[in-house]
Length: 260
Ligand code: MF3
Ligand code: CO
Image (tube, rainbow, N blue to C red):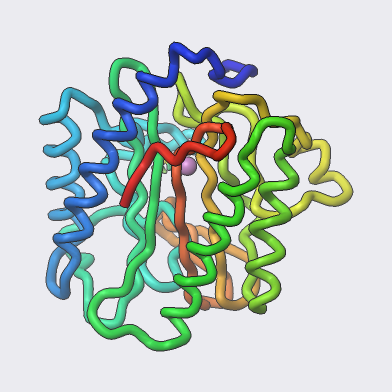
């Protein structure tokens, strides 16, 4: 396991190429989001588009807690926070909020990004949750400048989310990215206190370092549970959840590599 982040400036072109592939995928998938489409169809489109660009899906074969993920996208609906598994039976419906999360590897470099969007008309409450979570991402990204620290990103995200009476999920975090999908440092979406401080060191950010910043926000309580499929992370109270993520380079101003 690498215990140092990818920061070489020669990595930038690799990261940019991976990010370009990923952006093309997410922009395309967004156009396919409509009532009746199955989450497995979306996954197939994504995988084909990734491979046709000379890249590989980073989530496919990725091992979490000893289990291999076998799809290219995570598609999480309504109270599902992340890691929703594509399935032929799972179809999008009017009023759903849907998070699309994807990672790709090209020439050994990774990019990772996610967005959440409503299908057709969604409730004002759902719209507001999406707005605040996306704003929290951009406020976090604004902190990704050299000399700032991991907790500056965390604080910017947490403050915005909690000011609107939403909750930040604790168990999942953003991360360094580069020659691996998940590198140090972890980027929590809250300022760690007590023992969490050991688990999430408050490292200083360095110019050129690549980070995946990804607030995961619950409209209700922050607690999560894993569904019976062993993958899908849901809010414990079944409140709506949103997730936005970009791969960025630490710089003045920060460089956002991905698009959706
Ligand atoms: N969604 C995670 C991230 O953004 C990675 C998912 S790995 C998978 O970092 F195996 F669950 F897909
Ligand atoms: Co990520």
